[in-house]
Length: 212
Image (cartoon, rainbow, N blue to C red):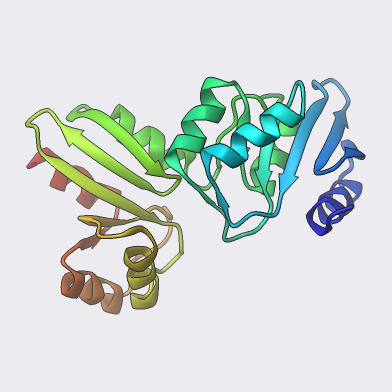
């Protein structure tokens, strides 16, 4: 049994409402009273691409959720689209735990980014959103202007976190601090300026998009 599966089973054993059992390979079954049973694959990869997602789907009939157990796990846009079109939930272990209790494992998306993703898609001036990674969106406005927006979930983003976003995912126009309670550090804003991107919160982002 792989390490991430052992940890997932151990974490579910602490829950009062759910129990989990090893089915085989990276797959576990989660049972919760008054909720649908959930078949989840627990992967240890650092990046989930379409090929990885398809392999898990093909190996497990009836797969409900693909869980990236590593905290640093990154999801590529093509993998996200493939899973969502296949009605398979995706995201972190925390996302899986919430989805099991909510009874929506098949449609759940990474809880760290789901609300912010929805905000972008529902904003009136946005006509297109291409999700390149779980935390990077290319946004097209009614005017035809495009912005590449990267999300940082930290409470108070640092200069290093802004630089790391840029280094790992490429140039962005906007680094969006999506933590509703956080505020980017002045050094983070300065680092963004050096790189050629703006570091901001949602209200500032809305204002920026309204002028795009």
